[in-house]
Each structure stands twice: as C-alpha cells, then as structure tokens.
Image (tube, rainbow, N blue to C red):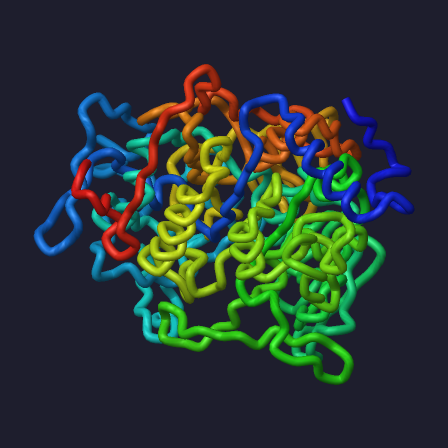
Length: 524
C-alpha cells in the first residue's frame, strides 16, 4: 500500500500529477465496495412527518397514486390509539398534496425537549407548534399543524426509493436542536468547543458573547461552550449575523490527511458580488411561502465553522480537475454546480456532501415536499446515470426535525444539566454524572434516513439504532481514517452496514419523474 503520510498529502515538490495519482489510490483503498459516497443533507423533517403511515397511502383521486410492493415491511409509524387517542392536545392528521406548503415549527434545543416531556411526547402543540403566527408569508398556520404528516401521495419519490432500496426507522439526531448543531454533528459528531462573536449581529439582536456563551434577545446559541442554536459560521464572509467558530477536527480534516478527495457543494455558495472587501451570496428564488429567499444559508454549511476546512471568501475551484483535491484554492467548499462540472469531467470526489438551494431543501416555511422532491429526483437520477453508480452509495437524510411530531422518545445517551435543558425536569436532561455532556442532550428526535445504492438491500427497513454521527463513522471506517476524538459521538455510533448487502451488487436504476415522484417507465 502506498504510504500517505503528512509529508505527501499536498505533494510538495512532487508535482500535481503525483498528487492526483495519490488521491485516486487513496479512495480506491476502501473497506467496502463503496468507492463514492454522496450525502444529500436536507432540512427539518421528523420521521413521522414523512413516513408515519408507510407503506400505506390514502390515494385520493387527483394525487399521484402509491401502491406498496408485495412483502413491503412496515415501519415503526403511527397506528391505532396514536391516531384516535393521541396524548397530545390534538390528533395526527394527513396533509393533502394541495397543502404541501406549511409553516416552520419551533425547533430549538429547549423547546424540543419540552415537547417530549419526560418521555410522554405529549406537548408538541404547546412547545414546538407555531400556529400562533396565523400566517407565514402566504401560508396559513394552525396551532395543530405540528401533528400533520405527508404520505406517499406527496412524498412519493422518497416512498419509492424506500421500496427499492433501504430505509431506517431508528435513526436519530445526535442531539436536540436546530440546523447548526445538526450540520456540525454530521461532520464532527460533537458540538462543544464553540466560540461566539457578535461582530456581525445587528444592534436589534442584543447579542452578547462571552468565553463560553452566546445569547440574543430571543434565545441562546452557545451554552457551556457548546453550540445549541443557529449562529452562523465565523469563517464565512456570507454570514450575516451572530457567528461561531468551532475548535477541533472534522471529517474533512481526516479525509484531507489521507488524501481522499472530498467536497461540500451547496446551492448559492458562488458569490454574486464582492462589496467592501467581503463576498456576498445574493442568488435568490421565491420560496414556497411566496417570499424571496437567498439560496445560500450560511449556518447550513458545517465546514465553514472550522478554520482548517473553510473557504471564507467563497473562492471558486482552481480548475475542474482539482475539485475535491487538497491543492484546490476552494479548500473543498463549492457551489452546487461545481459538483456536476466535476462529475461530467470524470473527477467525482470519493466523499461528497450535497446541499440544495434553500427553496428546494425541504425546510418548512420557505420550501416544501414538492420543491424538495424535484431537487432530490433530478439529483439522484443524475447520479444513477454516472459510470461511478456501480460503486456508489447515496445517503438521504435531514439535519433536524423542525419540531414536527414524532411519537418515538429518543434514547438519551448523553445527559446535560444547563439552564437550556428541560427533558426530565427544569434544567435537566438526565442526571447521570458519568453521561454528562453539557449542551449535548441527545439523541434528539427521530429523522428519515435512506440509502440508495446498487449495494443497498432491496425494500428493506433497518431497525439498528443509529444517529447522524453514524454517517461520519461509515466514512471513517470505509476510508480507514481513524476517529475524530475529543468526545465525538462517532466512537459509539451505531453502524449503517445492515442496510447494505455487500455480497450482492444489483443491476438497478430507479429513474423517477421529478414532478410526480413515480417511475418514468410506469412500473411500481
């Protein structure tokens, strides 16, 4: 095996050709047949919100029909008394396809714990429901929306992917809270080591930063040195408000050290201008609420929180050939279009993270399941047509639950006693000193997770206990990177391996219609 030590990772003095050869060799040395992993990280969906009744859809006229294949296994969803005598103050209900646009729910660290209420899961309407808004943009809000769910007549593509590949019904957020902690947990498995900064916060925010806390007039972003809120990354000139920098390592550092090609590709990352010496990310689309929304959301980009893996000025790639390589000036952080440029040039990175532009990322309020479906289907159709599909795995999952109802109380593997905890009592998320990790109460809510691959089990539901850091662990193990350390959840993360069948590669392509989510060949 070729030695890949620190003296060679940037191929200093050896030439670009040798650097590219080293990278190709590094990514070929994998523990499984997966040579290319693509993680599509969407926004703000609980498991029950999309899969509560899987595989049974209501199939009303005028909506895309969904009929489950014979022998489809069931999931731990909603049934029986959870529909008729739910412990919440209202009953779960199905959103019709015509009501795809919904209001954003409250999904803060403390509010989500309060909704689960010591495991009773009975205070979602009061604690995470946002019906008091009345309207969000052009979208009406109801107090009981938080209990609503979609079925296979709206999230049709996701249900079809589950039919032909593998889905988990026991996958959780690593901790409670919104997008920023979810993004950080994906790449490092730990959210402590956060330092806040108020320099970009408008005066109206009443921002206050100390060594281990960051607060605004409406809430807390950092407590006990741990990120629990949606502060934006300090190493990003497109950040627009309070920011946070993270210490420690992330998976990008590990991949770069082993010369494995990788990149994070996000819609809207390419600047529209440079003003007063700072990059501005001004590309916008109209969201599902009828309002104009920036494509790029800085706090959805986890690698920009770390100096070592950031591209503060949003520099473009040096060349298409260098996308994903250590020698590229973009430092592995790219616009979404750069991914397809690299793929078409035969330069697909070994590890890829894809982030949709905001209006297509599934986040309630400014996105919805139908605009999200178009992004997912067009992306996954394109990936299946690449020559690398034969050794590829696509992971589709979400950064947080948005506060949407999910009936499964998450197992609490890390305890925390801060002023922002409330799961088992005021200021409490458990009380075991051996499990204390301030500000990291978790697991958080249950989330969807699908694996789409020729190596994925067919029509399979996995019940293995996993969390967001399980994706990190798969990358670490597959490319033999070692562990993050520093208390990362990767060390104890459940494995994704049961979702694969590595002794059997299937000759399979599932090409769907982006509008309906149904197979283009008319099959089931």
